[in-house]
Amino acid sequence: MSAMLAVDVWRGDVAGGHLQRFTVPRLTSQTVLDVVTEIQRTQDPTLSYRFACRVGMCGSCAMMVNGRARWTCRTHVAEVMQGDTLELRPLRNLPVIRDLVTDMSVFFDKLTQAHGRFQGARTRHDEVVPVQPASKERRAADASIECIGCGVCYASCDVVAQRPDYLGPAALNRAWSLVNDERDVGNASRLEAVLDAAGAPACHTQMNCTANCPKHLPLTGAIAGLKRVGTRAWLRSEP
Image (cartoon, one colour):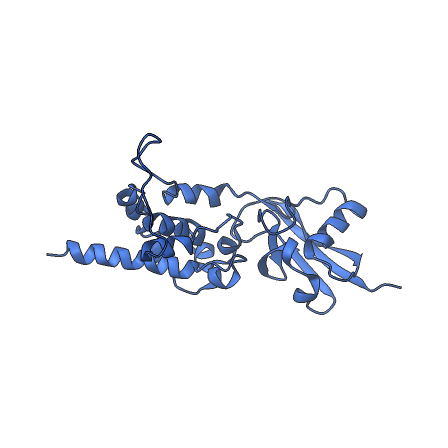
């Protein structure tokens, strides 16, 4: 007889909910997403969750696994087991739509608030601006551009939990990549937005975002970079 795994899954919506216990077969090389899919397909088809690529490219399968935000498609059960029980909840710091599905609107809205859209001055008819790969600015931008918007850092951030208006690591990381893009012309308004009280200055440098980022991005470093830029701008403005 194969070993069994007890799984406590959050069931409910924005109004509230509870943990429901399921039991699934324990398999070799089993991912947490495999477990959720097994439950939905064989025990309760009403269980709601998100996934798409299953290979760590989209980030849509992220949820809280034993209290920590993770991509479930790249997380093996053997790596996160606590005894014989697995606890699955929706991402923290986001409204719950149903079961393991969160409303990501607030997360993406903050990317907009941080002016996370590239603003260029040239058109397709102008010559391409050469960007030197070895430049300090290019290296800083390259270190930040691999974010796929999974929300793991946002769910891991204790500052977001305490003050919901905080822009969060992903939005500030995106702003930092654009601040270092010499082709972008929107930095005046961008820095005003991200150096506001709800932006980079609110970060407590706890590094939960960096520790939990599945892409291993230097998120805390990006936020620190914005703080340095803000400090220099303030010093230049002093009489």
